[in-house]
Length: 353
Image (cartoon, rainbow, N blue to C red; front, side, top):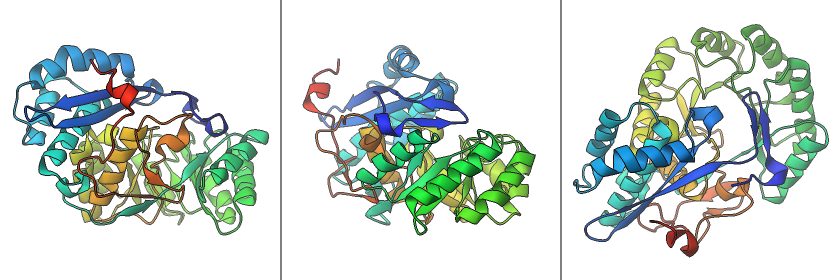
């Protein structure tokens, strides 16, 4: 799917102008249907639609078909035994399994996951590029209703500071503004950048240094600007290491990095137990993935005041859902429907084999 032309992300990890998706369907013996989405971007996870399709068809589906749906956790453990790594691929299947399970119970997925603790979640959108590109990104985001933003940095401190200054000018003095370096700064660059961007009312800095530099994250926390860990935390073991190092004020959780909705909620609960905030991050999920993000956010007992990245179809040139999520660009709202509460468009449902 091509990204909306005005919202192409240009960051330290490259340019994200399209995404590959694999849609997954699970059908139970009672004809309950669950849907999932593999949102895999090679530069991010090393996975894509082709690798996901291969592993689902040749490794995972043959082992899962015919087994009891409940407990879903047992099926997730089975996938781990069959396939090393590939958390985004497993998350697509896990989402479909959880969706079918919640529909079987006739409750929203957030309820099946232990919530719902809230029925709406504040959201933000990334701004990137320079000059006319940055101006267009902000204009497009404003037209979509967004009033909270995250500026992509990590591309050279001088240019980064100038970009943040322009973003603040565009957004206005009261708009929420964070920055995301995607690990693009050295420790020294990060210290300098954090000191300079503080003048522009930045609320947090996300992944300022390399994912493995937990000591560097800890140093930056001492400067006073809240630190959000993203690339530093994929699975549970990464989160434990982060907590032990006291390296972040908040962690950005993904469905894909965690391996599915249930595991993402468990990671969020662990983070909160140790005083680490949680927001829902994104690698560009589409409609089904965005719905799963929403249910995870609503299932978490504690959610950061920082807006989450549940951007869904706002980010792309078209939607895949029969009915879009209830979002106005400032918040996304949870509905009463069972499971994920969404289904793909009829033409996409007909395309499942």
